[in-house]
Image 1 (cartoon, rainbow, N blue to C red):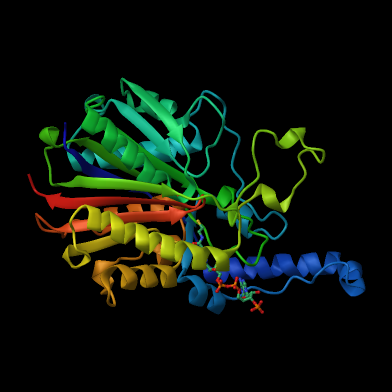
Image 2 (cartoon, helix red, strand yellow):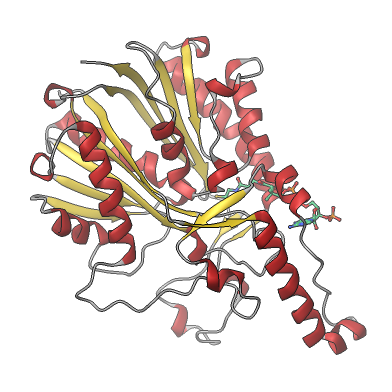
Length: 375
Ligand code: COA
């Protein structure tokens, strides 16, 4: 059996930033417009007035200060309230593939490897730009990788589940190396017109090169163990899909065609599932939590991460033990824990242990236990 490692990672960060201030200004302008247009229905009580959003609430409830997006003009236009993306011809790279190429190139460079060393591409993300052909096959083609590619979706746990699959393929010997890529264009599925969640998401793409330890050329992380868990819940849901035009109301702009969540319930229900999952995964591997040098957690909510850190370590985690990036990126779905890992792992010493853990819609939880190695 081959030992799988993460040999390199990459993060593609879109250049455009929306601060909380800009976001709240545009949301409030949209709410004012909406209230003016529905004045009569509001007065009769047939419709509820849209209240203003607040920067103070956003930071307090989530820890998010800004987000990167692929297009801010559409999102911030009170008459539009979603990204505006140019139409691409079938002969051009898709947007997800373009983001993926950047992140994959960084991951290969960090590992000092090239496309010729890779046998598989997994594009693991919450949403895919089209039904088929798979984005992964396009990425494979653009990078000049032989072998195969496939797409997968486990919402916020797509990246860790992708690493789990790649690590199993390495162990089994079916591939020498696999790129697990997470292009998350969350601005496309976020309902920017909903005050309860308009601040939640941002866009990014991460990539991880998973390969055989015997082939590494640079400092890397041994994948000691991976574990996945799912438990059905409707508390985070998006009903958009290929049967949309077959419904009685056709292509109607319906709220449930975008991301929806019952945030309070998610918060309450997911916390115990995640902390139990992490503790039992570590325990089964004979690793006591006090041996962990770092936890790279899913990036949805700061209070949630603080709670999980306390539960797993049995004490208050220091900021260095549990780095957050959500203040700069917001929730980037499956990519969040990989951004944290990519940006906060170089300083680990040989033998240091860490755990990546994602959680989200499904519900789904994925954990990856890692050990730093220099050779
Ligand atoms: N600005 C100002 N006030 C707002 C607001 C906004 N943008 N959004 C909501 N509020 C108000 C609500 O109307 C509510 O008012 P009320 O008490 O008068 O009814 C109050 O603030 C609290 O709202 P609530 O939705 O209960 O806030 P919260 O503390 O639960 O925080 C989340 C909301 C979404 C940040 C939080 O629930 C969360 O992070 N949950 C987990 C989400 C998660 O991990 N999801 C996974 C997605 S991949």
